[in-house]
Every structure is written in C-alpha cells, then in structure tokens.
Length: 273
Image 1 (cartoon, rainbow, N blue to C red):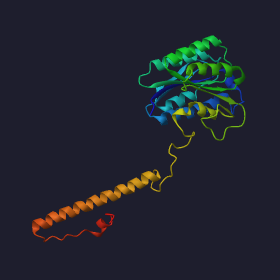
Image 2 (tube, helix red, strand yellow):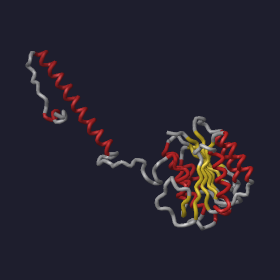
Image 3 (cartoon, helix red, strand yellow):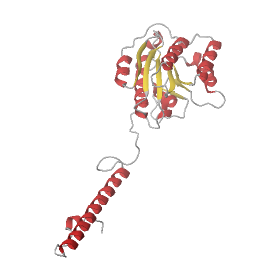
Image 4 (tube, helix red, strand yellow):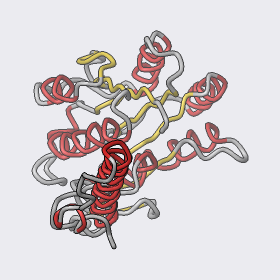
C-alpha cells in the first residue's frame, strides 16, 4: 500500500454561492471532499489528510489520519474573498514539506470553481517547482471551466512531463448528476462525483461501496474465507483425533493391551474418513 500525505484545497471564494451545482458550489465541494477523505484513509490507515481554503487562505486542519477532525472543519467553511490559486498551492506545499512521516508520498488536491487571474508564466514556474520536489497535484475544475481549463491543463501537463502520470485534472460541466462514476472519463456533468476520476487512483471501488467484490458467505466474510475456515476446522479435528489415537496406542503398549483402542464417533466425524 502507498503511504501518502494529502492536502485538500477547497475553493471558498464568493463564486461558491452560485447554485448551478445543487445545492451550491460550496456544498457540492463538501460532498466530494468527504468522499476523498474516506477514500484516502480506507486505502491505508496511516495516510494523512489536511484541509486548506483558497479564499481565506486558512489551514483549517493540519495533516491527520482522523477524518472526523477534517470533516468538522470542512462544514465550518463560509464563502469569502477571491480565490488565491498560486498562494494556496505554496501554503499546501509548505505543509507537506513539514510532514512528520517523511516516507509518505505527497499530493495536493485542488478544487477550482472561480476564475484564475494568475499569469500563465507564474503558473508554469510553480508547476516546474512542484515537479522538482515530486509533489503530485489533482485538480477538480468546475463552474468557470471556459476560463480555467486551458491554464489548468497546461499546469498538469508540465507537472507530468513526457512520461509522468501522477497528476490529474478532471473538468466537471453543469448538467444532471453522473449515475456511474468511473476513473476513465476526464469530464462529467452534474455534482462533483467526477472527482473520483482524478483522485480514485488509490482505490478501485466506487464511493460508498465496500472494497471487497467477491460473494459474501453465510457466516460473514467472503466465500473463499468461509471455505478456508471450514477446511481449517476439519484439519484441527483430524489432528486432535490422530493425537488421541497415538496417546491410546502408547497407553496400550504400556498397560499391555488392557486399554480400549477406540475413537469416539464424534471424533471420527471430524477425521474426514
């Protein structure tokens, strides 16, 4: 399993009051962030997640593996100010640089639903710096897609380079919600379920589903696990019966054949014979 520290950057600018994503852009983000946090911790209990706002530039939660702390901070976010794309990424990078577990890989997940006013050259310069420090970035582009798609696509392309695949971008258009989210498409209408396409690399399951896809046995667990438990019980019974038979033979040889060499019916039933 991959050990990873992730900083989630939430766009809480005034644009998040818009209702083109039901019920609002900000609440749609909260659903997606909830899903991402649970996905990261399910992939590995030692993974850590932090929360940062791009409008007010506040670190609401430092890196932690307790999802409850992150979600409680998430629901306290209110729309304010304008999005600070470059500054927010720099703060997230600084938080990852001072992480406690240095063996963790680093990732930044950014939700962008406001127009980015930063210069294209500054964006490319930051992308090269993140690539040098091996920080992967996933971007969820929604709301203002006409203004941001080209800038963000070039940003991710610079991060990945010619052969890299560690960073992703997903563009969410306005429309009916996706019914079957998947990792393959790069655009999806409706609520921000399409974030799964960008950040679902750590888990192959859909949001809300259990990791195991095999048939469940009647006694709990998978069918394979149930069969294994039954075989283990039969082996233990067989060993106990054989051990009992050996003890009886030793007793027979000691007492001169006066002991009764019998194996009870309930023991024979577990011998498999």
